[in-house]
Image 1 (cartoon, each protein chain N blue to C red):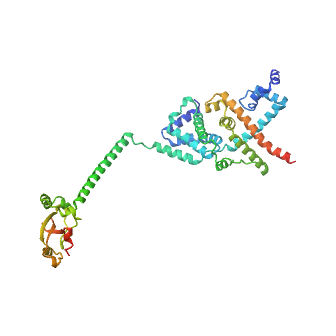
Image 2 (cartoon, each protein chain N blue to C red):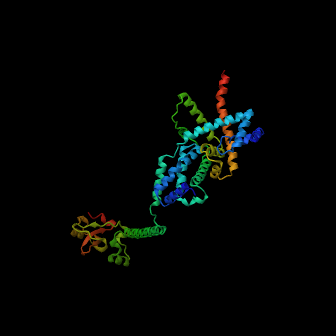
Image 3 (cartoon, rainbow over the protein chains, first blue to last red):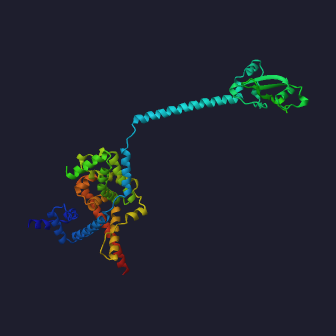
Length: 225
Length: 198
């Protein structure tokens, strides 16, 4: 009787607040009954409740149709992979730092060695041949104020016939003044009409003390045939 | 702590130590609601997949973020999921490819004794509901998804959204009203068009 009185007293505003919960399981049954009673006597609220129930049904259907939705299996695979990765023992940070420093030091050493080697090659290149750098003959020539052929020549020696090349480090340059015809004794072709000319010749002397190569100054090379 | 919670805590503890089986057991239990929530909120299967992955990656990488004394693992996961979804929605407010929509719309029809005509009508109707839910503003959509589609209680939904129960009720009320209005409009349009033709 008391409930009946309560339902008849429910206003449309009260119904609005409650209407959407009428069918919910957690709604107070007395209030739900009051709302339902109000909807029966009020056409506006009755239509609202009907529409809501229709929507509720649609939502329930949507829920049922999508209830089986789940993430694709690839997500599970990726996560399992990530877990395995995490499980693998990690290298301590200190070890990583030491390794990084060691690599950096090795890189610096390699760069220094490369620089040194490159510098040496440049110096050798400027000298024309290694023999020119530490040749006593060259030093003598420099002391006497004459320029070495290597200073203005291309630095190319012509190997003498039958000579065996030896390491540059063990060679010396010997500068001599001689008649052009004497070059024939070393197996070199000489133009007979100029055999009596005096020329300045550099001999490359090998480790065994024998001449291995020869070069003339530019102006004189043309006469050597 | 209930038996289920105890079991879950034990599984989590093993999973944190690298037990793959324990982790997968937890994943299989919780992934589906997380995925559905993300899918219903974003409308994109790709985004939902990404969200699920991020949520469980957090559990692998930072398990300490979950504190059993604060609540159930499921609620924690929902909270994380919600944050990811909101970030996604902020980042891509209007990005919804047609392919994704088409894919999301491919509902699996249960076996139904209805005629093909009725099935088609029902399908269309459900599609309308789904689109109407997706068209709701995010906070109302969330309340509808959690309370209506996931059938959470107001308290559970409030915990997941980290807001008072009153806020959830109010959002749900407005969400439902907007849904009703939209669906009424959609359903009345053909009727009005039919009446005009007569």
